[in-house]
Length: 192
Image (cartoon, rainbow, N blue to C red; front, side, top):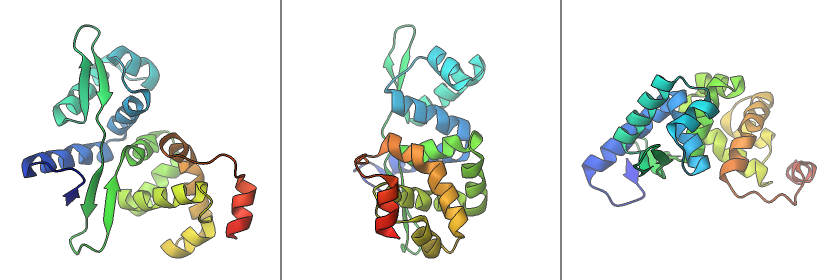
């Protein structure tokens, strides 16, 4: 496992375990993604926006603060919380594949509970597969690849590729710089 910043090994392990929790629990990922998008929020705002029970919201926020992926930005009542930037790179045992865990990936995992297409894709291909699909989704929105190329590269059906690319489209537009002056029709014609 490598990390993009220089930190002590204990910090790296803690970061990895914290991020693993986010990738395993969609509601935690959803809360983290909301804080990353909004810069900061109170627990009451999280309750209102994410439709969480009060006890659940406080429990989740405390877990994320303890894990070090969320910090208190205003200590007086009402406390305000913000997401810390996550950019963790994990390599497979053979070192032949690397996966970078970013707020965009955590956001995509957080949408699992509200987006059946993302949920199905994770069930079939795991979070590692979703990571790869997110890379293709960014390239697709930039006009660099098509769903057919993704399908061929990943040995999945063109329909499955198109479905996950569409499901990830809003995640891509919220987390990446995408030029809006190239229409989707133009991108598809160029890459077909």
